[in-house]
Length: 124
Image 1 (cartoon, rainbow, N blue to C red):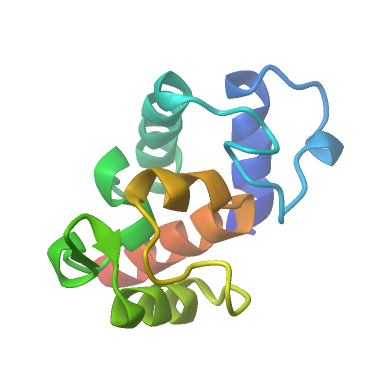
Image 2 (cartoon, rainbow, N blue to C red):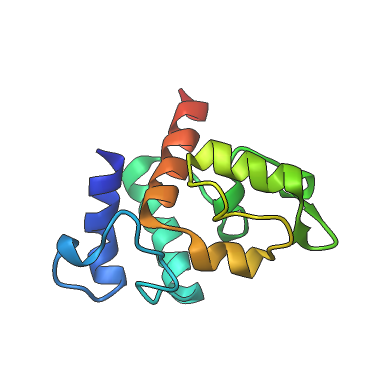
């Protein structure tokens, strides 16, 4: 339910006409062309529609202190494993050595929906 609602919310932000253009496994940046301004709007829409607060700098690491995942601005082995587990992502997509920018490039619609679900569960 969260994923479908998120896809609908993304339509105007990404200037798309149909949810069919927003696949669950589409990368928000690489596939759909989201930029930093779009993420600000996405964060606002998530808060307004799902009642959870996300900070753009913490989207990928919701529920976790980002300092626990990175060393020298690079994702650690433990950080990659935790993100993969929390987002139920396929193994290898989030890997040691990635920067935060690289993480955002591979963040999918499904990943963001999972982050929202995690934040909603924290509130409950």
